[in-house]
Image 1 (cartoon, helix red, strand yellow):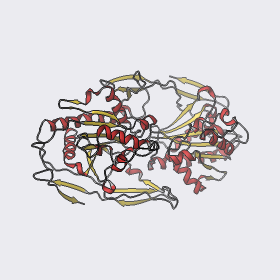
Image 2 (cartoon, rainbow over the protein chains, first blue to last red):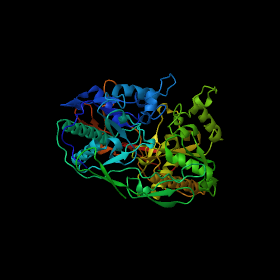
Image 3 (cartoon, rainbow over the protein chains, first blue to last red):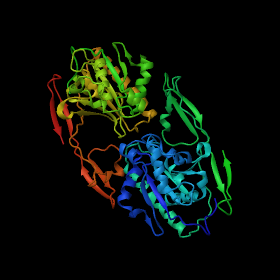
Image 4 (spheres, chains in turn red, yellow):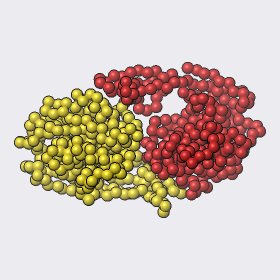
Length: 293
Length: 293
């Protein structure tokens, strides 16, 4: 990984969005809290703006009302002519694009940190789109150094079709912070505190970046999706098995599926983890990717 | 607790209901499975009928569509005149009352075992209405003996207003099996297997009861609700704290609440657990309750 040094534009217009999925409660409660007490999001060079991204879904404690908001920030949706029958999330995506974008323009916010929870036991997982990689790699490395005991992984996401559609794709740079395990609609105090601290560290990192701090080069693992394996299913499409009882926790390398239709059968499926070492000698734009299986 | 012995009517018409809440997935998948392969619910003296209680909510992966089905089996709802505008769950409760009841009559099923999941770390929790206590106490004791390493608690529920409203209240006797922790909409293989085994043991117990087996007297703890304590809230009614990070797991005696509005403050709230020892020397109807704090 390259060092981040030299002349660079500070990130002055920063937003922290929660409730993009209305039943992922850490971000919902943090956004509500910061809307009342925004001081926690202030740093010397900037003040991050808190945003409750999907108020209707949050009020209903549902992931979304009509369609997934976090798949709706495409140029197709954002640029289409508004009609009264538009799905709620399409209307809301246009509002957020006005507030934090417009996407792809010089007026867009410099950085969006979008807060999510998952029922999976991911620990801390930063999800970054490929085009945003260099700054985000340094951010992830900073969070790893700040939290040595915590699993803090970077997942590099390439949207199918290559058009970005996420909340943070509206800004010039951005990242999604995924924290689990937490059931939907449930707030766990330990994860709430953890997310609050991670947001504070992220803003600290942006502040250090803005102050011109030099971040030395390093090497790290990055995760990306190499394949999706469906559960065993019946001819009707019903689930015929689930993740093995002994492997409910995050585990790289091997997934066992327990089939419960008829006799219990354990099936071994190997999931190959791909690690990408990003090495770069000089400059942010000169990235060299080496893929190891 | 009394012994269960002597002349008694066998339980021949038994139902196992899953998906009463459509996003509690162990019961949903088990009911679907048994509807295709009902052999697992057969015993020498009876065959339990599998029922998917709330098909619309199950298809939508939601707790309910219009109102909570498991609060809808009151005589008021069941006896009211049907109209096209009735909530979905009121219509469905009447259908289930025809299938498994009618509630409060001699035609009703002998026993309903209703399957539920919770996000709370309850382990195995049997929920029994007071009027059904004696048979259910012996059932719980049997499950405890069958699963010595498993927390298996009996919660005696007294519905507010004293009118029963649950799924199992339709039958002459019945019990709710609550298993946690499992996020809504998620199926954990370990809990799925556990619930499947517990249902098998419950049917085994009913079979032994039907065969006239003598169940000796015993003593056990029963849990009941002594008070409900709300979370700290803001003047707007928003949550201002949650269960303390160190106490996310089931814990009797003390609950700490962490307040996250402003500075972090830990508040100590003592929850008194009431244990009820049911001691009875001779007969089921001669119950003596002693409450210990």
